Image (cartoon, rainbow, N blue to C red; front, side, top):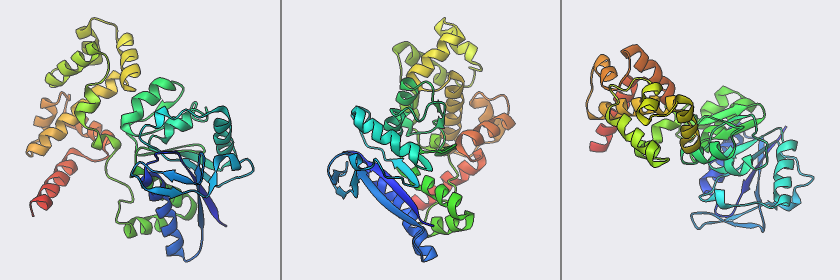
Length: 326
């Protein structure tokens, strides 16, 4: 049985969002010596898509030709500036139809912003590139956004965080279809983690995450970061701004796409990472400097946010430094 994978490439598409996942499926075919997967690239208009890199991508079909087309899996690839791509009613109808007819559908990177326009993500738990997370949460409040996750499955919906995580998503789809062993073999052949030992938070630049939103919220964030060792609760943050916790939560949801509690946890984790990158320190000392109530709490939160323990992160960072110095 062949699984057809269809990927929508909008003008200015990020080429890796398309080619990365398709190479994973092609590797499955090569390893199994049979064509389990076939692929099609769909364009919005015309059979040549100009990617963000300047490379021209040949599409197999145009969106207007898909009324009777039913792929097994339909994905929307991301593109820089995809939020400014405003589809007309016919385009949205075609996208919605592809989602409805496919066994599973989803997006890679900022493609979630276009997919959300169809309404097919309402009530679903999804992820997207961290830089798009705030916009997605603000524009589509019925979506449950997990800005930490690299990949998420919710029913028929599959979403990937950003660019290279499209490969992670494709591996998971292969695992669904063909089993863990084949997916692990593909990861080995492509020299990539079968399960990356980090979450998306590992890649977020702390200043980009911390300093967004209204000026008053920015001032609060700067104050918390400067006093991360003593600020313990969201209530203290709200008191600093002289507003209610509920109002503070609304501000964070609107401006950052996360709750103040989630932001505070991430900043604590960011501080732990910063200190570990400077030198190895006892867990108890790290916890105290970063505002955690204890070393065990720090380990649990750090592991949940990053996908690894503080000790593992420290070893990984030291190994990276050794490699760079050799």
